[in-house]
Amino acid sequence: MRKRLFGDEGVLTPYLYLLPHAIFFSIFALYPVFKGLWISLHKWDILSGEKRFVGLKNYIDIFLVRNVPAQYYWEALWNTIQFVIYSVPFLVGIALILALLVNSAKKGRGFFRTIFFLPTALTVSVVAVIWRWIFNYESGLLNYILYSLFRIKNIPWLTQQPGAWISIVVATVWWTVGWNMVYFIIGIQNIPEELYEAAKIDGAGWWQSFRYITLPSLKPIALFIFITTIIASFNLFGQPQLMTGGGPGRSTVTVMLHIYNEGFGTNLRMGSASAMAYLTAFVMIIVTFLQVRLFTRGE
Image 1 (cartoon, rainbow, N blue to C red):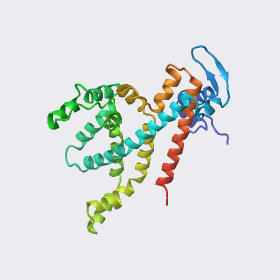
Image 2: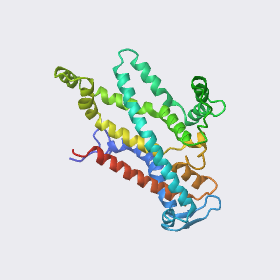
Image 3: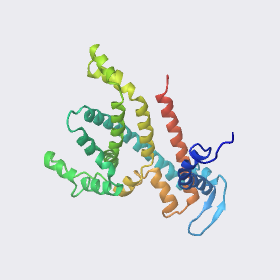
Image 4: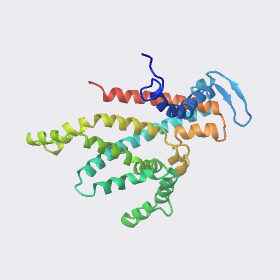
């Protein structure tokens, strides 16, 4: 019997449904990936139009100590790793605490879920304006409260360390923790209630139930949250650009901010910026692989 190509049982019908997505995915995802890789192999100047093939020179230059842009790249990568270390524990821990509190609330569960999730709807420019005002040295809300309550003199939060990192981490946690909270709530609500009832019959308290039922059951969603949070933290860009300008000095210039300045700032070295972007992506892949190995160890 000859098979039909189109129609309800056609061989090609499922692929026709996938075709619109495949077209947009190819244009906006696959093409930029290969285009960026091609640019990284060239000395690519967007002003002069020079596009000279240099092979792996842009990648080799990143590892040369005498190369100033390379030194700035490693410095920016270390700044980014610092931000990941400072922010991820709060982004995951606070999200879990909020999820437990919201899920256990007998009234107003939807209200509190909306309140904690609401900041994620804001743009990074709005978030930066809000927290620049709060951390402002002369007229900031935080310095006003500290002086009014404890007579603490004004602290230059945005222009000195560790205040600059504290400001960026606090703003980021406030802005994005709602996403992780929602993921944890979904994970908690998928845990069978029978497990808690059986534990209660056996005399288990809240801590035993949390340690031996809740945490192990949340392991798959926790892996997803850790991976997406660390990737998002590696992509930190808007907060240091708008809140601290990368300062004091270059202490909050992150790797994405440095790559942007390398390609679109005063340097306009698109080839070098593309090579740095691919090296950073390689680092992120290694970090993600280590996370998966850590979470699946012993399974």
